[in-house]
Length: 306
Image (cartoon, rainbow, N blue to C red; front, side, top):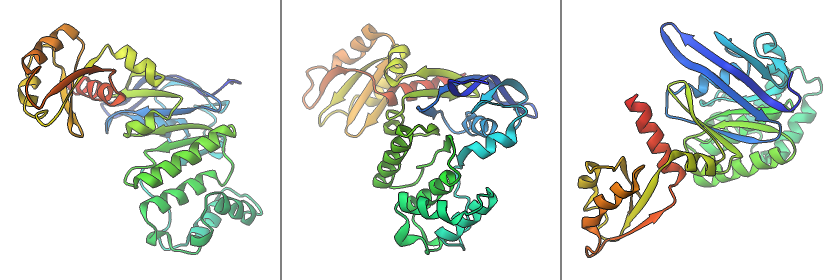
């Protein structure tokens, strides 16, 4: 049992027939931190999360989750973890309160109405508590799902793309709540495709085809990528995009708003590729620190080519 780590697993592997969905993953998450789990669809994030919370049994590997053995303590882990799935999984013909009271009875909380009342108040659900879940917007459904995850006072939250499809304000409010909970000692592992959310995590883990290919703080992951990025701006920024995509040393070209990001690991080659466009009317070129999204695109392209 690990006294210092909420999650401490090594060699975690899961196969479905001939397909290896998760391949020998090592994760060590200290208590009280917020970790981001990144990677394209089908990379193994959801499978890993389900193994961590006791819903799937690994085919290989070992370790602990909240101090309980991952292979033998699945039932204990389930009672200490709050798991929020990608898909809204509550009863749409029940109200917010009815859903939470049902969850409270499932966890055998005894006087379940007291934690339900407290959770509804903490997450600002009082005015909507009698509204049917099926009538809620994406943001309010998300808040209901988080309330259900928190009802039994878990020590670890496993959140699988919790903000997909909700508006920016709901996403910001959700993350404010996550950091408030983390400040109170809760540990959080959250999978996300949003780079601004990943940047709010203490550390990030990038998984591709079932393998971890990058991990660390955002700054570490960017530095370890070896990328150089040049930004092309101005009214003519779109003109060179197609030719730059085939240029020597240019690994990828992507639009970020009206600006073009041109990235690669050979700085001199990038300079040569961009040189013909320097001085063009309507184009300004300058070097910048690569963004996390630049690195994400690089890792995703490398994973697709593997």
